[in-house]
Image: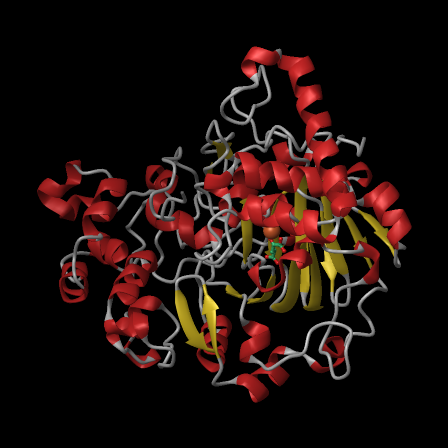
Length: 507
Ligand SMILES: O=C(O)CCC(=O)C(=O)O
Ligand SMILES: [Fe+2]
């Protein structure tokens, strides 16, 4: 479960511009809210109201705005922000007018986003986006926006989200160590994929050029053709014109990401190698064994659109499937780890059913990227317009858009991961996702289809399963292999599904 971004870890105070807090107070005073620290990138502008990190208070001679809070001074900023979540729009707005410190708190756009989602606007697909959740809820024009000097407000809780929504991404995405680089090829044959590459990430640079969408889709062309089509973007269903308004004018630390699995139907697209198709799956990935499920297969393809800084926090793809992700416009930075890796800043429950990554992408980059990059298993790469990336089954990945962009992704089951997928459907039934409710037992459905149509592959899958179990038993002993899926031993927690280590071979 993800925590809302304002329920962040409590951090040590940091001077404006400081990245890791390791040298507190070593920077000059930044009295005007300016930014002089090149390590954050020169992209972090002064806070619009002049709010500063807590550390700056120690160089400030004037009256700290927090003293105006009266008895509320004893309440830590984090708790104050939690209290504000209980206020309605009117009360929150008026409460902010009582003093500069509370104005800073009551302007926090995460709180207004929650108010938006609970209001009538939360159910509308088209409305006027006003540049922030607060301005949209209160229907404020830019001229009506507040301009108050809050340069005597010092708070990491209030300042940090602003930094996170403005840090330069390039400092994390450039200078990828050679050993970390995701392999790149022009294209790959299915034989090479099946024999050597189905368990490793790679990028293909000349694989999707024949897709008509690579020539015809840009954000502009989609807007002119599909402006009234309603797409899913996380918790909302918005018309494309509304989403574009949002995308072009928002400062969210974690921008709403358009991620729609019904896009082909909504846009009347043909998918697959047929006359008039918009795109098709690349040959190199070979047969997708979930195609045996026909219309009963789980959700498997998505249109992904988002602004710069949008993206996906660390996760593994559903049901132990593999995936490809093709960039039609824009560029994506990927950082990936094999199934059994311990990813810094990512916590997984014992049965791996819950992934807790309470940090936004920007926070993870700020706090953990340098540590993660040093791990020998770390893989990184930039997938640019016209390129496609392979995500092997079980691999952890965090993805961030370096530009506004469009992508298409599809999940699939290659033969080499059949055992892993069968194991997931069987032993992690509570974590299986994406099937319609009518499919009561995905494992039974999948094995019965294999038995009917590809008994040879059912044999292969069962042998892969048996081999994995045998190898696991040889590591932990028989008695420990019962019950829940095994976890890696001697680690505080495990990210593996146990049976899908990256080194497993088809027996
Ligand atoms: O484009 C992205 O944000 C990544 C989507 C993703 O996680 C995937 O394709 O598996
Ligand atoms: Fe993914």
